[in-house]
Image 1 (cartoon, rainbow, N blue to C red):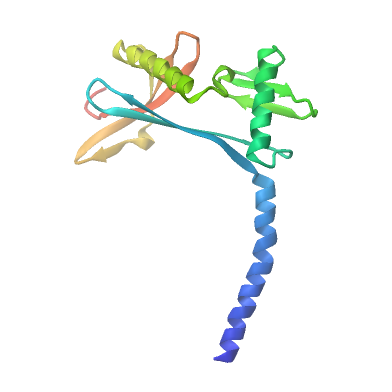
Image 2: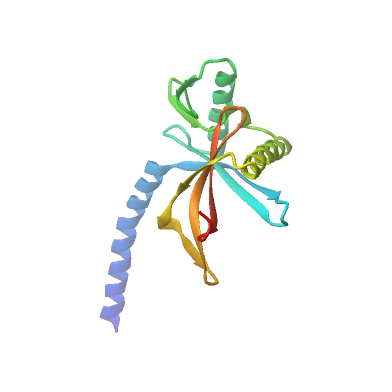
Length: 182
C-alpha cells in the first residue's frame, strides 16, 4: 500500500513539475484579455428575438492587464480620429502606438469605446437596417449544406446572408429556411 502511495506521489510530483512551466508558457504565448462583453436583444415582428453577443479581446507582448488593453484601445481610437490609422484591408486598421509597437484593429473604429447606451442604439439601427433589407429581399444567400440541420422532423437549409448597409459595410449573418424553400 505504501509503495502504491509513493508511486502516486511521484506521478503527481512529475506532473506538477511538467505542467506548471508548460501552463506558464501557454499563458505567455496566448495572453489575451477580454475587455468588453456585450449582449444585445433585438425583438422581431413575429414575437421572436435575435440575441447578439459580442466580445472584444486584445492581446500582445506589452499587454499584461485589462488596464493595458484599454489604454491601447484608447490610444488607437485617438490615432484613428487624428487620421493616423491606415486601412490595410477592409475593416482592418493599423497604427503605430506611442511605444513604437504596431497595432491592428478589426471592426468599426467609430463604435470603439462607446457607452452602453450608445452601443445599444448603434446595434438597434444596424438591426433595423438589416431587417428592412431582409424584408425587401435585398441580400445575397450563400448556402452552406455542411451546416444543414433537422428539428422535429423538419429539415432546414443553412445559409449565410450578406447585407450591404447604407454606409457600405457588408454584414454577414447565418440564417436558415425550411429545405422545401429554394
